[in-house]
Length: 273
Image (cartoon, rainbow, N blue to C red; front, side, top):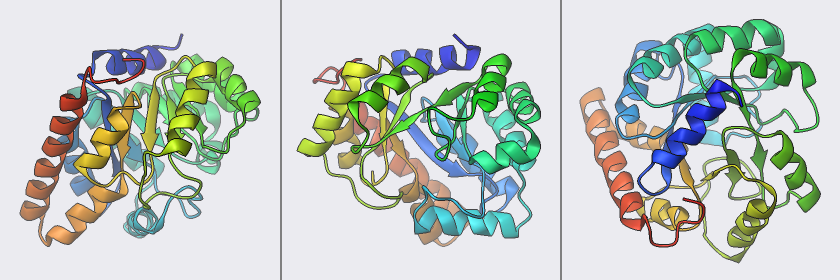
């Protein structure tokens, strides 16, 4: 097992309840501010997800798209985000980069993976890299000690889940809805059934993202999954705060409330923990 995959699985195993995985867009609103925000949320997190801005982010809703475009307009590059990842990895929990396949291919899979690994990155989330494609990227990631974290959705078939179970590493990112980020999550029969199917085929920890807005949402997810990913809501909170000091306070209070609710759910039927 790759070193990055080991770090990620260990982080889930050590979490008190479901793992908290906050997302930060690298370079938004600028490199220094995003590095500060990533280190801030790392104090609460079990894993940090750091976004690499891209011009055609197919998995991202309007909030993350806007943040990514602003980061690009400010001159953010993949190297900028990897440098931020290195800062977080030195002081915080494991870091995964959320990126797109064209970014990896443009840099060269070997060069990209080696640079990320040197920065202390544990894994890559690449939404547009199907589980049965990208052999060169997967080989170079494994060679560098990185986990390629797979994604699955409620529409993913059992056969596909079995394939993911054989090839995935780190954790399985379970998309809560059929769509993009930024909506709202509902822990109903569809999501429960999806997670039950995923557990039959995938031995990795299951983290649920897309549409998690409130601490109550996080608690609902923590009752059925091994991890909770929160992205758009953190960006909205900071944007709505009005100034950096207010934004920091809002994010601190929100993350503390999320962690409190997740920990309160620990042991109350969190599968796989």
